Image 1 (cartoon, rainbow, N blue to C red):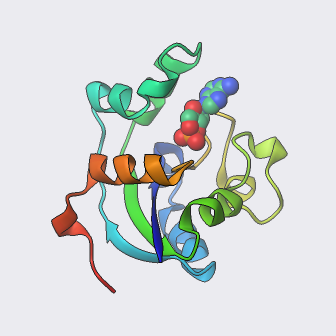
Image 2: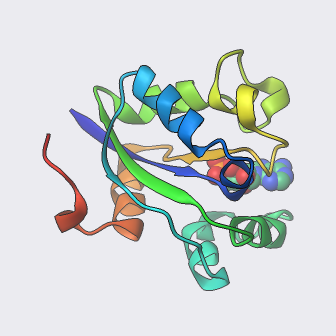
Length: 139
Ligand code: CMP
């Protein structure tokens, strides 16, 4: 069994879609093993997305990610990282496959409803960003 990190982003939380997205993820076979609601401050958002700091959209991304509450969660499934990337769809909702989280709930390439770790190595680091080992349930 593998783990990955998902974050339901401020656009989807504000639109009242957090529950619908969690249901979709559970229906796809993911088991949440840790989940909380928080609001990132700018330093936290910059640190989380540090890999994008040279990108033109970085400041806008930080502003968006700090604009309201987010719901980070640790999800467990066989092949959790690639499976979740498939289930959330392409970064740009216009390119996301039908039935994916972003096709259903994203507003734009930036306001795209959900984040998911893109590798097992990043999943370990991103899980540790939001949760301590003590927070993770053993199912
Ligand atoms: P995420 O998968 O969380 O990883 C980085 C985020 O940056 C991405 O989702 C989008 O929210 C945002 N992003 C990526 N590309 C662009 C872009 N071209 N313009 C604006 N925001 C972007």
